[in-house]
Length: 203
Image (cartoon, rainbow, N blue to C red):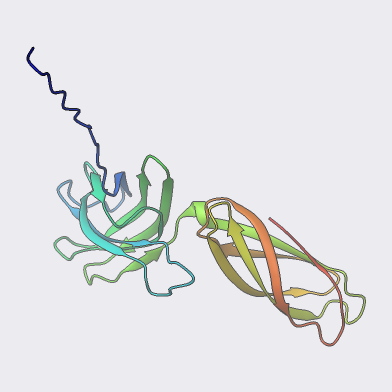
């Protein structure tokens, strides 16, 4: 009887990087020609434990059709630079939107990009947060104290915030948090002027 040998082949699908659908919006007032490309540098979110470790990707994006691109090093961008490459006269740039399977970000500018190539640094609207600080201090009411808090998201990524608040009042602070879903706070230093009191943090 003839022996039968079975060979099992595993089908492995490899995916590198994230695929981003990118669209660009220009002002109709001073819009460039349809074949113009916008120069953009994307910055990946930094790891607070390794400052300066973030990856960057620079490319030209068509203002007419946008771009659908696979970026190996950009999974969760924290900011972008945009500028006019200098091939066309200055024009007015409104916003850039980018969407992947995991994220959607909008970078608004509403600004002029001159032929001199000056870069505009933009942050995603989705990372704009307001933190409210309320203290229980009973002395020196209304005076300022400084604090540092660590905000963490559910993925274990943390970001430090240094700011100040007014004693015995609620202080609203606008901050940029490059976190997915802030879930916890840790206050690990603040100047209390020699007095002990508590602060309450909410978003």
